[in-house]
Length: 276
Image 1 (tube, one colour):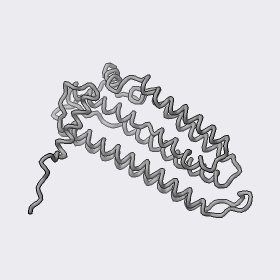
Image 2 (cartoon, one colour):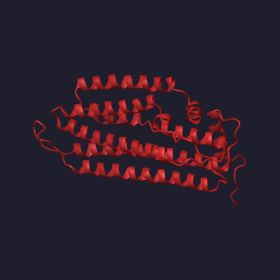
Image 3 (spheres, helix red, strand yellow):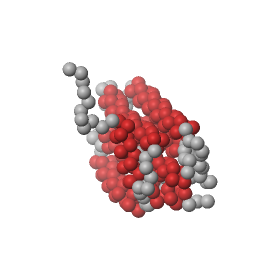
Image 4 (cartoon, one colour):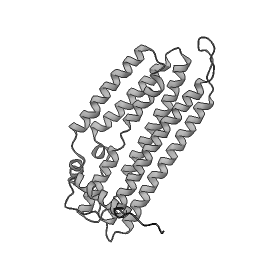
């Protein structure tokens, strides 16, 4: 018998349109209807975010494998023998490859935006290009910078411990954190330089909301804390574990306070639109 589609199956285009309608309602844009251009742009961003989450998970897995492989090398009494550099070099190459894949993902999103802009009969532009402070916001920027700094400080402090296993894990953690920071800078640069795709005031508002959402999605603080906790917590001494737990508690508190004390994305977008 020929295969038949299930009666309740939802076509991908209809599902994407429903998701775009939910996105508009989430950002208080209920007066707008999801156009095909907006639906295509939102679909591209959703797929890019999914790919970004996969890349970050791969980074954690590769870092953990590099630590395990490096730990198989026996060390002399006192931990004086240097570890094999090959796992660390492989991790550095993997980080570079992941950054390249992220750049390709950003390029694909820009390509979707350019196609959407080329299909417009006329283009609307913001008189003042929103900067990082208007899009990301100072509290989110400080929170991200403080998180990366705290995680890096934990890794650097682990280097002072006279234990080859802990020191090697600290090096791997620093390489992973460097990859996370580099990916964040590249993504923020892409968001700031991305062209505005709009044909009227309504679509311009949706474009700014999308841009603010992309900027706030840059917060990779969870990965920044996962790396030292996964790679270092098991082998580090007691004082390091106490410091790591204390910093993580502060991070969890800030993780809930920063979004609660900052305006919603739609409000930030309207404030950026009001700049003349």
